[in-house]
Amino acid sequence: MRGRTLSAGIALAVFAGMTVPLAAQPATASPPTATTVTRPIAASAAALAAPDISITNVQAHLTQFNAIATSNGGNRRAGSAGYTASLNYVKTRLQSAGYTVSEQYCSSCRYPSNNLIAEWPGGPADQVVMFGAHLDGVSAGPGINDNATGSSTLLENALVLAAQNPTMTKRVRFAWWTDEEQGLNGSRFYVNSLSATQRGYIKGYYNFDMVGSTNGGYFINRVTSTTAAPLKAYWDSLGLQPEENVEGQGRSDDYYFQQAGIPTSGYAAGASARKTSAQVAKWGGTANSAYDPCYHRSCDTTANVSATVLNRAADGVAYALWQLAVGGGTPTCTGGQVVGNGGFESGTTPWTASSGVITNASGQPARTGSYKAWLNGFGTTRTESLSQSVTLPAGCSTYTLSFWLHIDTAETTSSTAYDRLTVQAGSTTLATYSNLNAATGYVQRSLNAAAFAGQTVTLRFTGTEDSSLQTTFVIDDVTLLAS
Image (tube, rainbow, N blue to C red; front, side, top):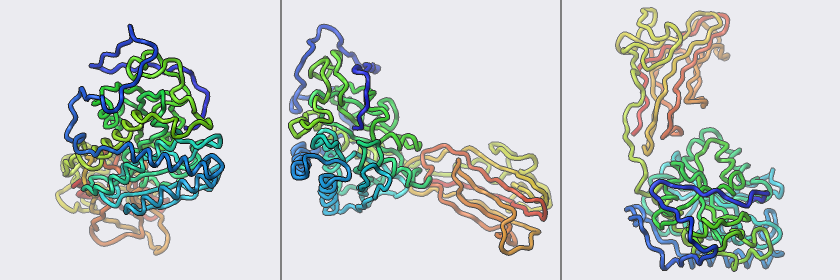
């Protein structure tokens, strides 16, 4: 995790229905072992379906990363030989498992080097759930808790997903970031490289940074958000009472995804901030001591990892992955038409339109019925619009915006678009038509709106004319079908 001076304390979160003992507890307690944990909350069917991630396998990856650091100057800093060897280790395992793997060169990183992106070839490409961890460490040590633990947790989850090869309801994409320790540079480069449409495909980004701290806590990024729900549900099933990741806010690779409007969450076990007595009462450990006593130090080796904390994080990732992308909790497609009054026969509701746009005037015929939306046609500089707020259900395979468009023009050019009709969903332009698209009668136009699944957006048609020679844009029978 990227370093920054923080307050030593973290506020205790209180959740409805949970009693947190705050008094008559020792300042130091031993955390329960993984084999003695019970589940006071009944596990759902999805939890039972999710695989148990072998902590032994995760630890084997940690051993490999530690050995790589030892062989390459003692660290795995971005741009170093240790980082390159770490990337090659992960890449080789993923390719052998059947992933589509690519490297992205971060030219703007402080230490130019590659991000590693791996996608499992199943599920709809426009419905992506993304899991990420930074692969680099600091130059002071091998970087095992920070952040071979997150990297190994994702690697083993990816390998288990490939081995089980279940039917996918969403596309799963894994990422291992470079240059996080120098300012979140690798993940920032990746997010900035995405188009608006590509960002819209990512329905959630989950970040895992330092998930095995020896005096660790159980922290979740944006713990009360809908995106965090599957991560929280698993830890709730263990009675862990997780808290908000206050220490890590803005300090890891979820930051630029969040800034781009992509929902985010993730697990963390804590860095240099100190554990409170109330947290010791819940989780065990030592009060007023750092969650990770070897944070950014040479002692951050395989000995600096709690197997119990790491195991719970790895299994929680599997639970969330299965819940989100394999089954149990994935929204069912309700389907159907989401545009109201698409034929304009019921007046203006629920449309918002410029005066006179929705009309039964005889100058231009409707395709069906009596009414249509007639934009422009004045032969003077003018802008008119037609819009409606629509909510697209989640979980569907296709989202098709369709409408019939008649363009009539007095323009004589065959090369210059003087007058335009722009079709938008939110701030994204889906298509633009002009006087060059004029035709006799109506032509059906169909556009892909899958990037907005599960969202409420404004569907907008905007017609603009220049100062002379009219162009008319007539729209009828608008549908947006999810199926």
